[in-house]
Amino acid sequence: MANSNNNRRKFMATTLQSVGLTALGGLLWSGYTDEVKASPLVLRPPGAIKEDDFLKACIKCGLCAQACQNRETNLDKETGVAKEGTLKMAKGGDHKLIGTPFFIPTEVPCYMCEDIPCVPVCPSGALDQLSVSNDKGELDINKASMGLAVVHKESCIAFWGIQCDACYRACPLLGEAITIEMHRNERTGKHTFMLPIVHDDVCTGCGLCEQACVTEKPAIFVLPNEVSKGIAGDHYVKGWDKKDQDRVQNAKAIETTTQRSNQSSTDYLNSGDLY
Image 1 (spheres, rainbow, N blue to C red):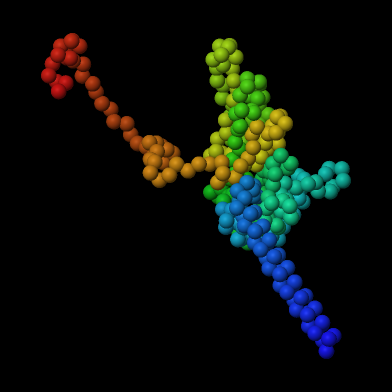
Image 2 (tube, rainbow, N blue to C red):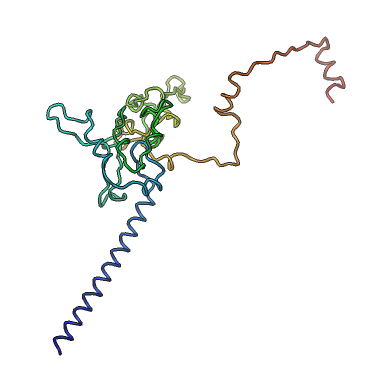
């Protein structure tokens, strides 16, 4: 009888411990997923849909990372073995949802493959092929919008007056996504600042500029669009934009004529025509 009671106590204790550990594990996992889902500083592959939708759609199959790893341009010429690819699959400790693809430009940026091998292999729609296709339905990596490069003026040596165009030269869309603007140095009156300017309507967020930056910690870095771009709000109205330009492109000018008055300026100002 005593043995039976001891066995029953052990069984109940083991059961309660198992339930407690399961509940604790659930709470920890819930907290972890909430943390990584709330993290806005994650760069996804080309064609990735909005982050919240991406996390729901991605089935964590790893096909995109595999396609990126095995692309022809990533093979070592001597050994024929694939080098480290751009895309990584998140694992424990990465502070990102485990099994989802991401990349870190300072380590391996996106090399802007023309055939974008990572996108067509996605089986779930987490990577939208149409978003990286041109009007002819052809894949076009220049349509990608993985993020936006941002220049930190305080640490960019070009803003100190030191000539540097490393980011400009590294950009695959040379002279389009990043341009160099010259500004006169008012202090000396003789020198010119050559400043890198990023154009968000062209920048794909590939991160090649970030990797090429010469400073110890890159002064130009890629951030997700939701973080790097502001929203003006519906209560602001632009005075002029591209739609306005397209609307008046074929408009015909109306010629007007101006008649010169014989009045002197003094007589005109003293006349009652101004009222």
